[in-house]
Length: 211
Image 1 (cartoon, rainbow, N blue to C red):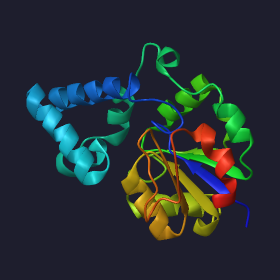
Image 2: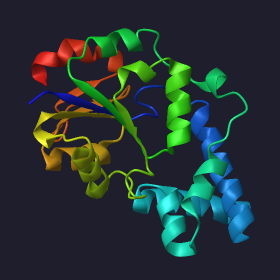
Image 3: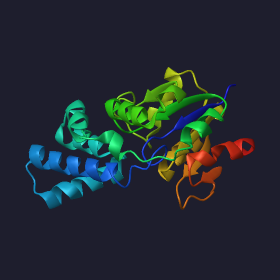
Image 4: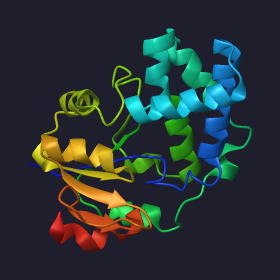
């Protein structure tokens, strides 16, 4: 079976932590304040609690408050200058070209945002498809349901897939389904569920024999 590479987006293909994620977190808090009529402290608590419990703040808002997911995702992922906020390694495209097989992006972010980030990175041509939270039926990683939808939609076999992520719980699910796993990040380390640990996706080509 042909190998398939499945990449997370934020903090995997680009550094979202310094500029983009703080902006999104602020937008989510503001959204909760406006639509649930709570103060800033309570809104922040809800945003974090739902993210930890459900894997995405959105899912907690849907289940507990009936929030429209499309409305929430659109209004919390707006940027005046997204290209100016995106930070990525200049050799990323070159590294992706050296990875044989099909390539996908699998993200808990909405599709309009994921597409805009890939355009800003100049990486659209490297990926066959983007599988966003809308495609999961709003069942975000680390839930297995979204992974299974991705596999079914694109005719993939888990054992032919390599999941590349900065979030360990998501790799736990990938491993349980039979995927090979790569943990990305400055403090990444191998473990029972991590086959390869790298600081950056640009290091992946040198690990092909291990995957």
